[in-house]
Image 1: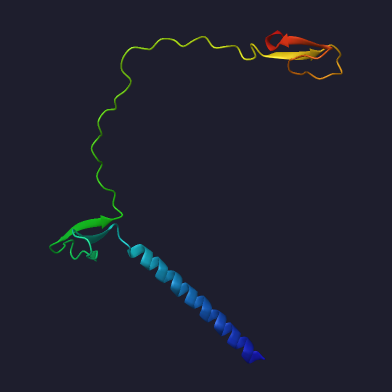
Image 2: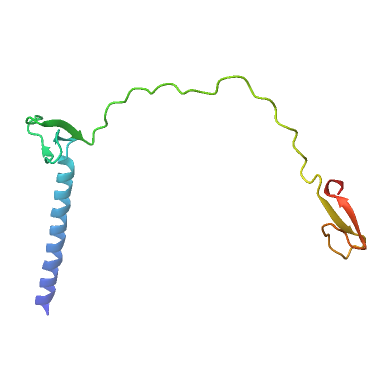
Length: 129
């Protein structure tokens, strides 16, 4: 029984050690990554993008940096706003509800209806209400 406990402790210690080694390797890899990567981009289609050697490219390739922001472009032309005189004013708008007629019941128990009014209803313009 004691052999299994010793084996189990050894395995746990081994896994912990391996995890620490992997974590340290990840930190080292993350710290060694430098700024923008320099690559050679072909001027013609169909050729591969290659890594720059000593920040130089062979003929037919242009040196570019991946992850670097390019220069600011020139400002565009000014916009053409509205010009000329103001147009004539539009016609006067109607007040909402003007010209709308309803049939109002004489007794409170009935509902409002639309014209033509039946007996017991009075025609009223909505603006009067």
